[in-house]
Amino acid sequence: MSGGGLRLPSGLTRRARAYLTAYAVRRAVWSPEQHRRHWHRSGLPDAAIAQLAAFQGRWGGLELPPTPEYEGGPLVLDAADPAVTDALGPHFEAGKPRQTMAYRFTVDGTGRFGILAQGSWVALHASTEGWVESAALRRLADSLPAEVRMATGPKIDGLPDRYGLRPLPEVAGLADGWWRGKDTLLAIYRGEARLFGNPQYQTAYLYLDIEDLTERLRAG
Image 1 (cartoon, rainbow, N blue to C red):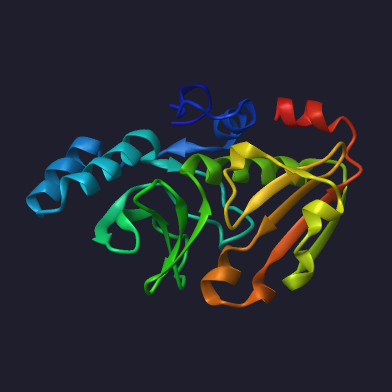
Image 2 (image 1 turned 30 degrees about the vertical axis):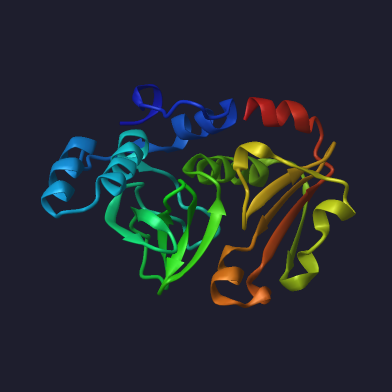
C-alpha cells in the first residue's frame, strides 16, 4: 500500500509525512496481537512484550527507501527478537538489514533507535520518529540546489558551532543529528564510529547557500 492509501504514524512533521507518502509502502507483517500471543507463550516479560507491540502497531511493515548511511537501513520496520538485559532493559530488533552486516538495528527500553553489535550499543536517535525524520531530511537535502561538502574523521567535531547552526529537534539526534542556519544544513553521522571505536568512521555533509531554506524545509 502506498500513496494516499498509506497509513501514516501520527506526530511526524509535514516533511516526513510527504516523504512517506511519496516513497514508503506497507508490507504484511505480524500484528501487535500476534506478537503478544507468540511472546507470552515464550515466557517473555510483559514490559518487553508491551513495548514491542506498541512499536509494531505504529511502525510495523513500513518499508522506506534505502538510506545513504548504514548500508540502507532496515529493509522493513518490523519488530523481532525481543530480549531483556541489564544494559538496555527490554529491547528488540527494529527490522532486518538489507544485507549481512556487523550490527542490528535495535530499539531499547526507552524507545531509542540505534545499532547493536555483540553487546555494544549506540543510540542514533531518541526515537524511531527521529530515524524517519532524518531519512526524510537527507532525501530533501540531496535534492536541493546547494554546494555540498563532505568531511570525515575528527575534523567534523565542532562544525555546528563553527557555522553557527542550531539542531533540528524533530531528528531527536543522539549519535547522529541535523543542524540548520539561514541557508545551511548539516548532517552528522557518528553511530558506526562510536560502535566500533574508530573516529575515522564519522561523516558529515554540509549543504551551503540554499535559497529559501525555511520554505523548502516547511514544504518538504
